[in-house]
Amino acid sequence: MEAAHGSFRSFPQRVQWLFAGIGALLITTRALSFVQLLANAFILRGADLRKYGENGTWAVITGASDGLGKLFASELAAKSFNLVLVSRTQSKLEAVAQELQVKHPDLQIKILAMDYSQNDNADYDRLRQLVDGLEIGILINNVGQSHSFAVPFILTEEAIIDNIVTVNCLGTLRTTRVIAPGMAQRKRGLILNMGSTAGWMPMPYLATYAGSKSFLHHWSAALASELKESNVDVYLVFTHYTVGTMSKIWKPSTFAPMQPAYVRAALAKVGLGGTQNLAHMYAPWWSHALMQWCVEHIIGEGSKLGLWYNLGQQKNIRIRALRKWEREAEKAAESRKAG
Image (cartoon, rainbow, N blue to C red; front, side, top):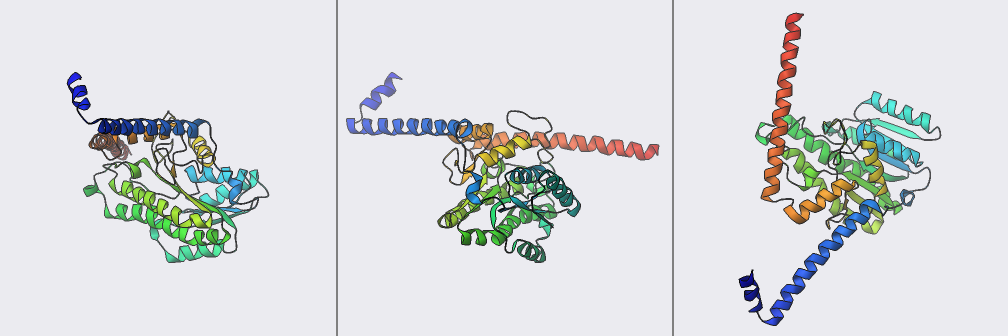
């Protein structure tokens, strides 16, 4: 230590001051970043959603028949937004619409059943006709698809690859292409795209899903810059685990909140910005924001250490999933024999 200190003092005084200034700047910026994280998570509230439309304005939600999409619909209905609900199954959409109509008798609800994996031009034409003339203030691109469980890319079925990219990327782009021009013309609107940890930090064994979410990360930031002059806000919602069918987590924990709480946080924190200087991206849940900050400033989201950890985690998940599948297959075989 003394040798290093002596070596440092051998530099000209201007160089010493330069290094000291750089060190102080790094420490200060990281400290301020952490303070901003705490303020965003526990003190500050995001934009008032009335900014995007008065009572009776419409919100379009994709993947709205269950999970986060259904909860976004419920929260926005409570805030007096009329709803356009888009999802694959007509019967599920009708059930959600009926449930919301009972709670909010004055609410107007339109539904559209479309399978995003088909990328059918006729479906997007029907969406365009459905929203024609509506004052849409909010679009939530919630529709998404992942792998059924962790799998190496070279073992991933081509149909699964096609579906993930088509739903997550093309579905979001084409829906936004239908809705965003009206927002830009009216000079107000909010577009929320659902992101993922896997799209920010490379995730082995979920490579296709991770790539699709990484695409949305960069596309959202680019689109936000384009639409800023039109007073249309675009954000990627950084999402880690929540309790539900996609994560296959059934008990809440510090890093896996219940979905209703997560959705309320997502709507309450709109516009607060990223937690590690990523424009147009925010982590609404406090533990996700803290994890994101720590990885960014301590490990590095694309570091070898991070990749090693994620690879090991996903390998273990795959092993457990395969064992469960084998047990279920054995039980099914025994049942057939007994029958």
